[in-house]
Length: 195
Image (cartoon, rainbow, N blue to C red; front, side):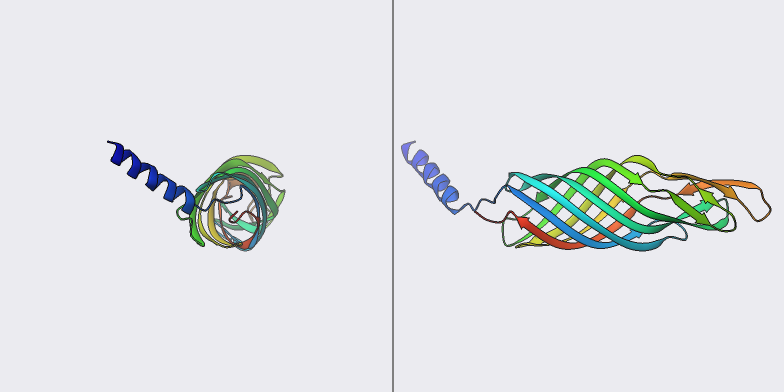
């Protein structure tokens, strides 16, 4: 029994000595391309800042603050309309799980929070859309960190917005503007890394 205990203690000591802890606080800064969903939508740019704290080497919690500028599509009962949105901002509590402690660290993550959608104008004939609103939504992501470089792909799950307007005959029409979008991001990490 003493030998088994000595072997277990020795193995634990080796693991502890070889463990490479990470600095707990870091800030991710990224830019990228936003790909909105919906008919008539067009991609745009996004900018992100996300302070994080590593509660353990493999798990970090953060606050993602993102601004995305894009044109999103709407469906007004068959009318070919597109909604031009000036900006969509989001404030999400996030969590990332890292699958490796090597130099290249693949990760997967998720987040929940508020998406603030700027006022929009639509064009088909004389269509107008709803103004600013806030929606509760979520985000799923995967990516990789290599040293202080970060690449990721995210899907932002945001409920649709109601859109009203008029068709070419002056009849009132209603529909939905999809708010979900994919973000392809590249950026850097300030802080963090190995101690």
